[in-house]
Length: 218
Image (cartoon, rainbow, N blue to C red; front, side, top):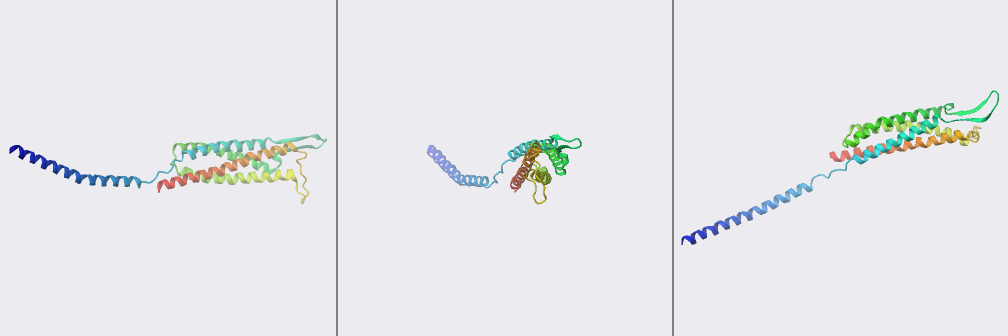
């Protein structure tokens, strides 16, 4: 009888434990579902700006080469014709034209600007969340873009007149006599307009980086 009493007590306690476990399982499952729902509602992280900053750095290095090469090519451009008289010597130099002098100065300024902004590009690679310096670069890039476009356009107009002349004003093309000088001037324009393209791309990349940062904050 004593053994049956202990057996009955043991069975009763086991049934109680089973019921407690069954009542706990739905709560644990519900809590797990809530945790999963919380994870699914977490904001999706926006991609890093490090890749954009690396491209920006490469573009600025290309811009240095283009604008500096354009300034050197135009600044050293001159040609002297093989014939001359006792009192007249036929030669052409870049500083004979104000537009070419402006072109050399502007390209030198933009090249120096690219050099000075290299450290900021390196900072953006290390700190992809920087905002203030990116805004500053976009503003300065826009100013340099306007300056370089003005200088390159003024020089391009003179090169066009040198190649084709102007029949309305009886300006004859001079590139038939000063062929080397015109080729040097035309070649320097390539580097300058390449710098314009670089500045447009850096402005677009800066705007893209700021857009990503804005999405990350939201």
